[in-house]
Image (cartoon, rainbow, N blue to C red):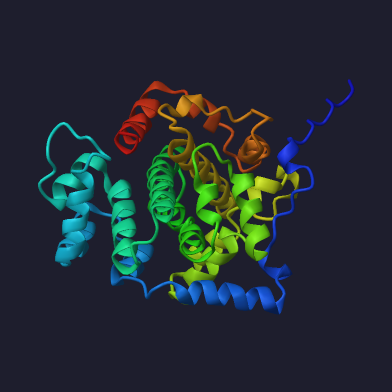
Length: 318
């Protein structure tokens, strides 16, 4: 029997080239350094988030030790953005109701916001979408990791949380880029705009910033190579074992986060992993299978997992 014909590439992937760190010229590297150094020094809690705070007690202790951070978290969860039916009265209450991963995302968002200038309305809107995507990705990475037997689901969730770090730096530093963080813009269009603007992308810049901030090496590497499943057929994926599984799951979680943030996804079962017309998902199904994660498409349809995941989506989409 003849092999099936290869699927045609989506139009946006035709001619698309993902720039990697090894391709950077000295001039581009200097520009990336300038973008990163324009970011303020990280809030102390950022390094704690990157290295742990994976239990309710450790996360609560880190947050409540900073009165300003506590106030920001409680203000955010009680705002119209969450539209909760009842007020959240403490950090512990927020963790119990929303979960550790979601609150870690809110802490990361609040910690960066505390250090940054207010910015333009366009920058604020873009940052809001970036953080919504990151919070969603982190929470879903934790759930997926637990369901699929990943060795360290909390570490996977942390990597997913920090993957958008470069987007924060780009939106606050590069003129014109906030526009590509608008509703409906997909990941290929966004990365193309980044590379046109500064000959680099969020993965390169995020890894550089994480390195500058002395975040753990596994966070730096996860960010730098996080887009491998965007452009790489499964047969050409360079990683193996658990490292490969984490890479592919982090990428999946990121695409789910983007669907929530930029398209208002409310049901994980609606993500069609075999939709060849979606450029950001083109290689994902085969990469899941190649990493031994072929159960994922069915998992997204399972009622129990779907209910749990959609509860997070409902809170973040309120």
